[in-house]
Image 1 (cartoon, one colour):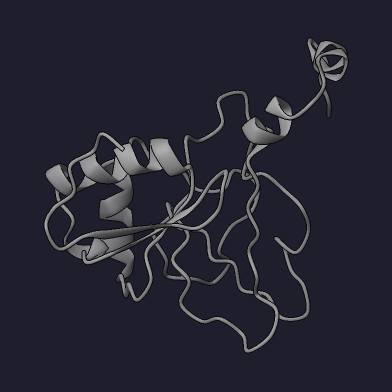
Image 2: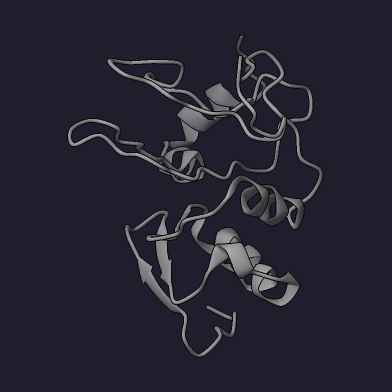
Length: 155
């Protein structure tokens, strides 16, 4: 890794193809220099986990703005909520809006660069979010399968 970490930060790689846990920082207090390091780590690991972070809604939005223009979900709204429009609340019991395999908002012509999930409450069972590297999946395909995939589109 070519990124120089602040002294108190620790990075723990979580799997062979993606994911790292970052500790030793407060996302609510992150500023441009720290976000620059986070961006480098995101490029390297693709998914970052920051345990024990307790961000207020305004902290969540402020952090997101370091990564670019924010947008809410184009089709789903936080009905009856006081949340900022840039935050979409996933609140599910026994399933819900994200209880199946999906890739966040890639149906748009220009999909968002990333999503920031701030888990407030996690159930005792379930509530799992699983991640996969589509880059690694493609790289593992045989050349004939890669050739078959070239130019394909899907709805």
